[in-house]
Length: 433
Image (cartoon, rainbow, N blue to C red):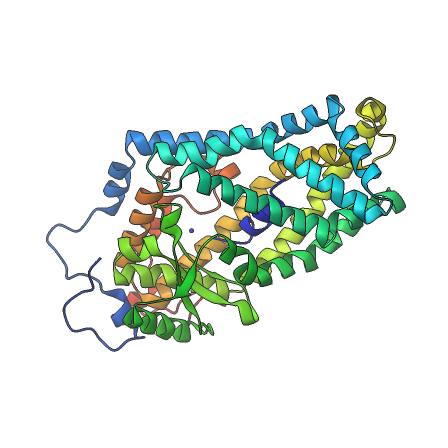
């Protein structure tokens, strides 16, 4: 199911302080910390390729393979539920538990979420636990990981059942069999907006502990950077992501009262101050360039296309196999696995478009960070550390990039960080002025 994970993923991104006296905080010179010219300039692209070790290559290629397998594995899970008649039996149990439609929908959803989770567990375990431990990227015990997965399922049930999204969806399926996809697509806009608002306040704290940034010097520089960027960043937090992973990240989340800058504790430990400021500048760029709102609009448009493709396939499949699967119409609750499978496949088909949109806004955030900080060297070093620590393929094939890369490949980002400096020729910036 993983509805919350998918929705938020489509909207989101991802040492010692210099001892010499620093210029006043908030000026480009204070943020760039560019080293003095050397006789042998650092070859970052060579370092990128050298850091892509056979071990990193194996991890990255496995991740790519899993990205292609996952949607079709979920089709297999749905097929098991449908062809064994298990979905129809769960529907019957749900109908026996309550007379009201809402109660029946909620009961079926709880049963479906539990059974689907068990069937999907082998892939979830390998992808989220075994693989990460094999390559030294996870710090979680199996019990902690299972507890986290349980929370995800709980939030999905709350989102789909208690709000109640699934009940509204099936009412639309029954009353508007030809236009339900259009109505559900229209609902996606307020729903995802609400998710983005409450995510920092409700969802994220359920998985990690967020505390105000302890380093007051760094906090002051981040707030000064945010002020220069035109971002009202009054809250700067650090989060204990080291409880789960050794990877690096930072982000700006929410809007209005929930808006905040968040730094992973792994990032705080593994990056120098100028690298952290550059990464923060990238995240501030997402906020300043209205990428949150553009992402909400893009997700809503994508949802409409995904729902349309699902409608095209679901109606003939329900006619052809519905009686064998135990339901006579698409608005029967037993059809949930069918719709879930088709939604997953349809999302996979439009994934290249969503990835292209994501790569575009990530590149814009890179431009903004460079123009804001003038920190070319810090940017290249930050990208190098992010790629090395997260074991990403710096130069994937165009096909893999087309389907699975939400960010520009690492080598491209490092090359751009090194070469982009219009201010040195007296030219204005493209996105920050």
